[in-house]
Amino acid sequence: MYRQIAPSSTLLLNEQSAAIEKNGRQVFRFGFGQSPFPISPVLEQALIQNSYRKEYTQVQGLEALRIKVAEYHSAFEKRPVSADQVFIAPGSKALLYTIMCAYTDAAVLIPAPAWVSYAPQAELLGHAAFMMQTSFEQRYRISPEILEQTLIEAAQKYKNLLVVLNSPGNPDGLCYSEQELQALTLVLNKFQAKVISDEIYAPLKHDNQHVSIAKHYPQGTFVTSGLSKWAGAGGWRLGIAILPENCDAQLKDSMLGIASETYSCASSPIQYAAITAYSDNKIMQQYVKNKRTILSAIGAQVYKAVIDAGLNAHAPEGGFYILLDFTGYQQTLKGLGISKDTEICSKVLEDTGVALLPGISFGLPSESLCARLAYVDFDGKQALEDINQHGWSLSLTDKHSQKMLTGIKNLGSYLKQL
Ligand SMILES: Cc1ncc(COP(=O)(O)O)c(C=O)c1O
Image 1: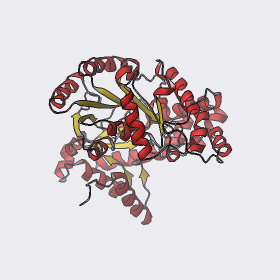
Image 2 (image 1 turned 60 degrees about the vertical axis):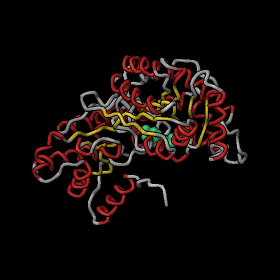
Image 3 (image 1 turned 180 degrees about the vertical axis):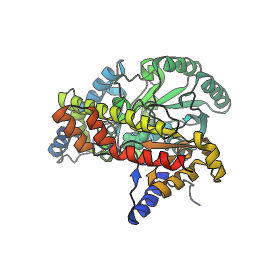
């Protein structure tokens, strides 16, 4: 008897894409959401200088790093954060799991669409996962009414209520506004629910105006983030979590126990190097600013192309994803016997080489006909060199979006002739 955990849909997509490329055809890799940018040379140097470190660190994370993370997040979230509240781990995924694992008798409420791992993690831990559906019209944001209804339902059976929020969002690239977060806070507070606010894409919010729910609900919010997206260092496995303000000592002890019995600590050379990432230095700031400029310009261009292709979408606000809605082609697709997102993605990949991830991977009903496009199919190293040399311009947006625009245009022509 084994646990039933479905293999990740990205792996399946990669296999299918590889088979197409093997046959000499071009694949537009819009399925896999990995940062296209290289690591900043200052961070790379910091890692080289610390490669000799071999000791385990404190389970909670190196104190010098926690101090820097606390300073960074105090400024970023516009609220006081102390080093005692900070947890460091090999990736924020490990921290999401550790936080959920600390609770017994828990319901985990997840707005859909949602990043792929929240629900499987909750289920692995034996928690009940409550998916809360959103819609295109609601910009895929959860409303206070649905949140309240679901909390009422969950509170009837479970003592601890954990709500996951993700802003900017994967797979939709959209953010909660300050007013929306305030309205959600009123409901969360009423139920004394905790929120796990996954803000891993926050420094890549295109307009650099991220708002964290922690500013309004510091006593009930866990913030998770790390180096994977804004520092482009997913494989370094460095995640951070900020515990709720004045949280009870038992929660922290529980998390420390879970961490020490599973991953022990994040790699020490990486933790020492991460001090540079979280320090107030001009080079890192410029590096992240450049990425925001590039992603914002490319995201806007991609959005325009998606609309021209006859698909519905909202202009992305942060990170590097846009959620495509194929319902404009619903009748045509129905005529071809296609009524599911998985069928669309597989047919589109086969016939046009465009690789997308179906909405069902993100908890959407298959019939909602959505798919995620990651606008990362460009040379991030070259884009950073170009912006450093010349500043950003429309012609650079065109140069770097070219392959993606070709793919989306092909997709549009294909859909229109069906
Ligand atoms: C929304 C979201 N949260 C968390 C993660 C996991 O990040 P980490 O590399 O810190 O484990 C990802 C990675 O794709 C993500 O997209």
